[in-house]
Image (cartoon, rainbow, N blue to C red; front, top):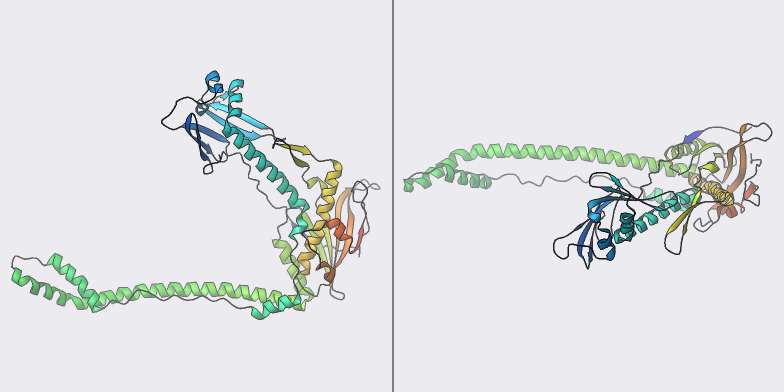
Length: 431
């Protein structure tokens, strides 16, 4: 009987920022300068819309260079121009006049296509489209490259021995306590503004009396205000210290427990860590996991509900000799190859994640299954398509940057059946 303890992880939300905004080389994003025989032009755009405009700066000729302008009579600065790519990466131009009406004039479209700004923008959009398609595919098929580095017992022990709590360094109040000299200087300025008389021979004495009669009260007032500011500052520092120290103590305790748990490797700790990891893990494919740890032989059994082949990107990008790109659908065989790489790569990724929970995990048995229509019942049923047992020592020797995950899987005890068309057949999983 198989076990089931499901923790569902939703597919991560990926925001693909397309390049529909306008940006020209030679300037900041959304603006650039073009200098030519006909004068100097400012090319501006609204990022995120594909809208751009050209405006000639003062001086020089008032007409554009090139015979196309003199023949067509169109000034591109009078139009709002949108440039996008369709699903096959072909440029699409939409033109609107200043009244908001769409313009379909063929001569105007040809003039736009000859404009250097249009050529630059199309090249940018094609580069962005190619990068987007390739990135989406890599997220699926190259997931094994994200396999974490395997930790050794020596590294864990060293980290545990060097683990320290970071504490907050309390700042001192920098404002100096007011002195009698400070207060006297203030009162001297006040006396010059307040004590004025035509009896100049008395003015010095009057101002001196003003200072002497106010200095004690002002000293007391200045000390009270200074003490209040110091108290407020010290209280704020105390609160910062308490929050900072508590936060870093919690981090210290959590990491200390993880390191000690890694070395001890009791069943409760391992189960807790697996659930904690799965609740926070972000993977660009849809999956779910059931697990069981058997401490008697240090084996972690994983049932991995794999993403469906329909979830994989089905398009590919070809770069033509002209520099343009072509978006085409993959063949069935190409999709099967990508799927094989994706699902076997997931085994290595999760193997690396779970081996790092504890050194007591000596083996990880991962069995991947998918949902297929049963030929015998006609119902949608789970079918295992591979099962592999990783051992810690050989797993640590793998350089995940350079492997083919399907070929690397063969280094371990495995059950997998792949047809000549790279279709994965049903197998019996290890138990």
